[in-house]
Image (tube, rainbow, N blue to C red):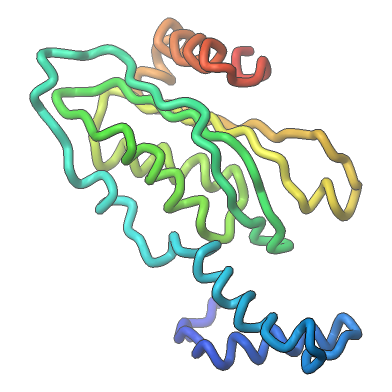
Length: 203
C-alpha cells in the first residue's frame, strides 16, 4: 500500500538532505567549494521539477475556433526538452514531435511546447511521458486524432551502467485518426522527416 504522506519538506530539510549526500560521497559539505552547494542544488531542483506545480489542462485551456474550416494536420516538431529519469534522477535529453487533427478548435502552437515542458519537468520514464502528452492533448482539445513521438538520450545508460553513448530511445503514441488511418499517420511521419527528425521516426 502506498504511503499517503505527501507533505512537502521544507527548504531547510531539502538542503540538509543534500549535505547528507555530500557526506555520503566522502566529501565535506562545510569546505569552501561546497558550503553553498545545498542551496544551489535545491534552487536547481525547483527549476528541474517545476512541472509538478502546473496543470496541463490549464496550459491547453485557451483555444480558438476561428480557423476558416482548417481541418488538416497541425504539427510542432523538434521540441527540445530536458527531463530526469525517475530511477536514477539523471538527465533525459531529447526531442518531442507533437501533432493533432483539429475538430473545430485549435490551440496556440506555443502551448504544445509548453505541454511537453510540463511533463518533462517531473521525474519521468520516457514511455509514461509520451502517453501523458498525447492523452492530455486528446482529452482537453478533443481533436480527431493525436500523434506524439519522442526521441531521447538517457544518461542513466550513457554515463553509468552499460555506458552506451550515442544511443537514442524512440517512443510513440497514436490516438484517433493517427491510429486508425495509415495515410494520416504517414503524413505525420513525413512531416517529422521534413523537419529534420531522425530517420527512425519515419519507419
